[in-house]
Structure formats: C-alpha cells, structure tokens
Image 1: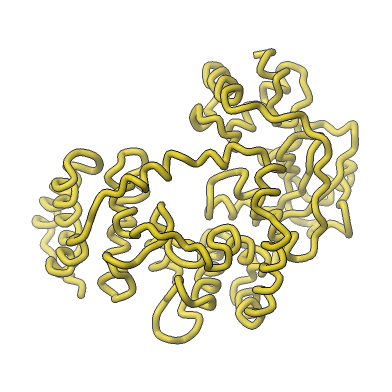
Image 2 (image 1 turned 90 degrees about the vertical axis):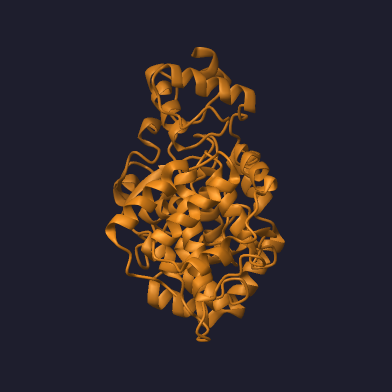
Length: 391
C-alpha cells in the first residue's frame, strides 16, 4: 500500500539523508539510506522493513559484473558460439508453438517474431536458464557498488514496488546477476512500465508465462523506439572500389542510394529502399557486411554491447529465413593486450573510446576509422596490427 501524504519538509530531509551515502561505505548505513528514501517516496514503513529484511551483499554478483570477457570476441567467433543449429531449431519450434502470441505481437506492436525469438534465445535459452541470483540482493549489491549506482539504485525501488504489488518475493525471486527477471530478462523498472498480462490471469509473470514475457518484451521494444513493421538488417555485398570511410553507424543514407553506389543485397532485394540505412562491417571490409536500418539502433537500448547487438540482430534474420552470412577472410583480430594498447593510444590522441577495456565497441570503432582515414589506410573501422604499429 502506498502512502501519498508526505510533507515537503519531511521529504526534503529524508531525501538528503538517503543521498548522504549514494553508494559504497558500510552496508548497514547504506541499507538505512535506502529505507529512508523508500519511505520518503511514499512506501509504507512496514512494507519497507519486510522488503529489506533479508538484504545481503552478494560477492558473486560483483565477480560476474567484472568478468564479461565474452564481449571481447570478434563477431564471427561470438556469433558462431551463440548461434548453434540446435538453438536455431528451438527458435523455429517456439515460433510455431507460440504462433498466436507472435501474431498478436506483430499486430499490436509491429515487432517481428524473429527479433523476440532472438532475445528469448540469447537471454534464457527460451526460458530454460533464467539465472539463480537473488534478484533483490543483486540489485542492492550493484547499487552499493560505485561503478553504476545511478542505474541500479532506482531498480531497487522498482523492485520494492513489485513487492508491494505482490509480484516479487525478496527472499525467493531469482534471475540474472544484474537483476533482470524472467524469460526475456527485464529489469524491475521495465516490468513496471512495460509489463503486459498476456495470458489474462491478472498478473505479469515473466518467469513462467511465455505470453506475458513475449508481449512485455515487445512493449518494451516499442517504448524504446521500435518502428512498426520495418526491417532492421540484411546482408549485402560490396564493390571492391568502395569508399570505406562511408561505412559505419555515423553515415546514414536512403538504402536506394547505397544500391546506386554498388551495394547489393546478397539475396533478394532491398528490404526497404526508402528507409535510411548504414553499412555495417563487424570485422572490416574482408568480413561479413550488413545494411542496417533504424530499428537496428533500438537493439542498443536493450543491450549496449556492439557484438551482442549485432549477433542478436543477425540471428533474428536467420530465424526468419536468411542464409548464413558469408564470413569472408578478415584480418585476424587484435588480442586483448593489443586492443588495450590501441585504445590507450587513441585515448591519448583525444578520442573517447569508452574506456581502455580491450573491447571493440562502437566508440573505439569510430576512433579507429578516423585514424585509418588520417593515415591513408582503408577506413573500415577494423583495427589491425598495421594500424597499431602506425600509431
């Protein structure tokens, strides 16, 4: 039950007290600050006490947060690791099993079933592996940790809201290490804002109800800017004499203009000639090449990893019948040490690479491309030892 009559003075004092320790420090004091802020937000004090009664720091959460080395893999390796024939078959089977739900998703939200199937597959293997971390403890641990408290502190109060509604048990609800819940792994704030009761039982149950999970996921994508019934990606082939500096997510043109410039769909025709599109080469001009449309950018609102997003977008096309990409013969990727050295050099030159972490993300790619262009190298945003030596 929410308490709505909180005086301005009491709220101001409580708010200041709660933010005296926004992260870090003694855990007991940190929890006291969360409790004070929760009451200031209008939650009943008894509800707050019950919610935080079993709160604990979870060191496994911090270890998981620091150990995301999988995103250092290049696209071909990463996509082959995540996309097996078994996972593809399971996706097709689940698409048939929940055909009526996907029909509703496509009708109401304009989100293609391949997209949701891809997220469902990668996040939890279609609900089979949802994580066994205590959700509330994971969120509190990450809010206490000072790496990203601005992201996770609000999620604690959203989880409290779900508890107040009877849709979360602080002692028993489990999920991913970062606090996501259910088949498509949604954070508590996203559940509150975008949760859909797809099976009509009066609750949004993302852990056990596929209709709830799929419709909630579609509603989330819609709220993040998904454009109804538009494509997101298709594989293309490139002319040998192309100006590689025009590739990448900074250059968008009508797809028909790329066609005029010699870019050709690998199969079929352009998905949407009139839409703006960009040319994406995850491993440079000698590797796979894709034409991406505005909906591709919405994937980044779900997950900020370039390699994950590109693999999920590609897998969604495979689930809808696209052929396996042509891998080509890209120049070998830099190892972790070389990538960190490259990022440090780029940072010293004034580029924002998003941190010296050994991960080839979007900002590092852009810096690489600009330096390739400056040095007279093929500006395809794929870092090589030649570029590293030149710097």
